[in-house]
Image 1 (cartoon, one colour):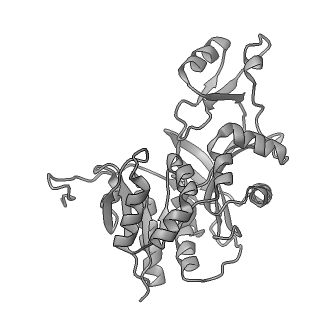
Image 2: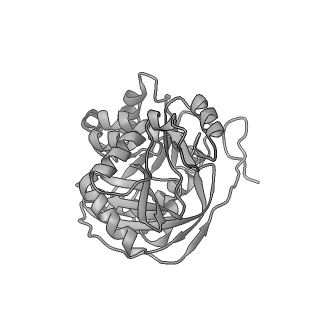
Image 3: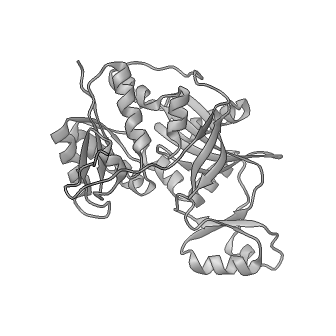
Length: 327
């Protein structure tokens, strides 16, 4: 039986993602240890993995070396990043990691990551390539008395909707500008908000596109969502990935407005709600195992439509030996 071990970085609360890889391996009848790494011993997901490792923080000098060491020790074949702060460093060190560890890093090239990680770069890229985006305001425009509200302010390199606010007045705008170190300000856009899970193979060939209507969110992450095979969104995403040229899993946020599709941001990694798309049938975890076994995948829309996912919290108890207590 073939062995394909997977290392999930910054596993945090990604219990569903860990379990999705485990279930995919079982279905495919392959041996796979899902190794969950995090800098904290209290990251819930590491207790659901087959093996857990405590890694340095990303800003520590031995971060990349320790990832390589873990891959060698655990015979890891795939490295999966899950948070934005890892992405640029991993893309820059991709060649070194892969050559020294023998594992594939699920990361797009540095140019693509640089576009996605900085929201100003994302805005300019989308505008240049003819995709609709909310208007972004310059500093001079923000100091003008002719501003029309509501607006929206967010960090230019943020995630999880941290320090992202709807702005209803000039007074609010000035307060937020003083609190957020590096920000962008855009028009506030009304419409249906979608998160789109997109999967491409290691050569950038598109395999699945799954639009999810965001029914409710909490702390920037979807808590209730509905899978909708929206052909307008799917066709626009196909155009987007042709020019962006990502690989692996990416997450695109957009709003369907009366004027059409307007893009909000692109995250070149698994989103927190990706297990919804995986469970609907667009199984990126299974796809990754198949690719690593040398299979050629084709584009498909073989996932269930019009199904709703309701996410909720759960808890585990850890004893003094950092082991799960079974009640």
